[in-house]
View 1 (cartoon, rainbow, N blue to C red):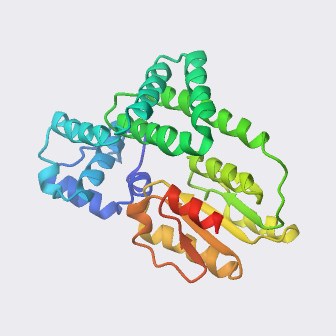
View 2: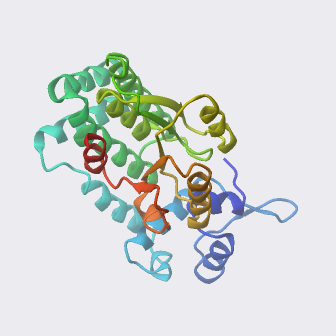
Length: 293
């Protein structure tokens, strides 16, 4: 895929002028050039930039990171992958089994193992200790280029279907408390949002689920015909803090009487100034505790 420098800015959360400085000072990226001398970037550039940002957030200077070979960067990512290994051997067995069957596109085996997890541990434990760690590991493997987009889509689509089946099996809501769940227009990774929908419905809450990539103006149409008590959004993508801040402020100010809840990218959200009606749900445990109360 082909990207402009402004595309990289939106996808990495690094300002365009900062990317140019990193290119000029440290050879962080070497862009391609069109016949008209316009710079452009490809998927490998994007992955390298995301790796640089991630390693920098762990404390290593940009100048040091850019001197590293691709092999050295992959070794650092491998350390992150090792940190996703569960200390519980039982959970790790299921994570590894799902990864093995998913990488080989074995839908029957993947589905069988996932169903066994859900039957044995129930959905909440399965998601927290098996599915979510698996998704984190997949993201790291993509950055290391040891998994392709097709494999990731294959895995996540089966997981999505399992969660949707679990949602369909739940009883009708017993509460008039209504939650509106959606992702902003630039967000497409909905697994966390889908699981949140399951947990809310399991506790008798009414849920209006809009899914990913919802235009801002579309949200107001829901409010025109529904009484909404809470909104929940996820911000998973790396993006500029100023962009995320503007979006949250707009939602908060437009719906001041609605509880706005945000989850997702910790490195992003911890840098936001959240208004009184905005709650940052920092973890699955925090979310569970909040909705139980």
